[in-house]
Amino acid sequence: MIKRYGDYFDDKVILITGAASGMGREAALLFGGQGASVVCADIDEGPGEDVAGTIRAEGGESQFIRTDVTRRPEINRLVEQAMAKYGKIDFLFNSAGSALKRSKFLDIDEDLLNLAIDLNFKSVFNMTQAVLPHMLQHQFGVIVNVSSMSVKRGGPGASIHYAAAKGAVTTLTLGVAREFAKEGIRCLSISPGPFDTAFQKASGTTAELAQKFLADVPMNRLGRPSEIAELVLFMCSNVCEFMTADTVYVNGGGGYR
Image (tube, rainbow, N blue to C red; front, side, top):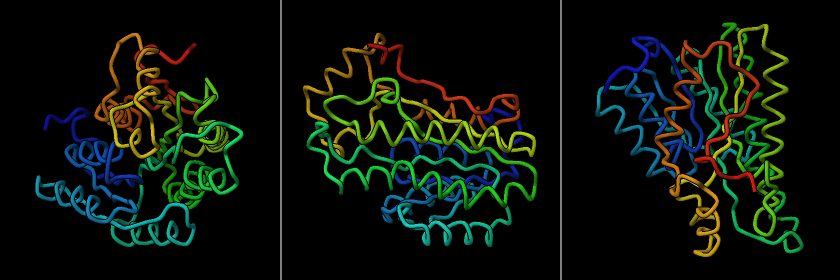
């Protein structure tokens, strides 16, 4: 694999949640190929071990740690194990998340709302709070969170619970970035539109809804997870050092109507 940024990532460590599939998986493989040590966290053990194993088979350094990111004790254990293994965490990519299921607003019950908040917002809050003290010790770190294009639209008719949780992620990113900007920490978010990942099937996206999403994208295609991985790599690189607090919308020109 061609080194995008020279040897910059050779001594760096990244922790990725949701690393077993989709954007998290692509980011793990890309960072591993660029020389970074990759801590892969996910609730799905088999696919997670496969990602870490693939990185090692290609000459990289990686380990998988099974983690339910909706549980703070498991997050704490994840960070402790990563620190014990590598001694530092330079980058955190909070990729884990899901709309869980599509639902009209009046059909969203308390269980769905709580789970949406736990998985999509509180996991990001807790991961950031657990990792940040270690970054502050080195006065260096980049945190990249996955928000959503739905924050601009609200998710009407299908995923207001998800859009609201992701809106909180965008706000969290802004607050953390500004609070710690003078201490060597950058925090950014990415707001994707519809992408070709397991996310759509897992959340029960109907063919009709999928076509509606696609019809709103001028490029007339779904995004590819590798495109997000490349963006995360850029955000963490040494050519992006003045960028913090922002969210980057990645949706082929759509999502504005």
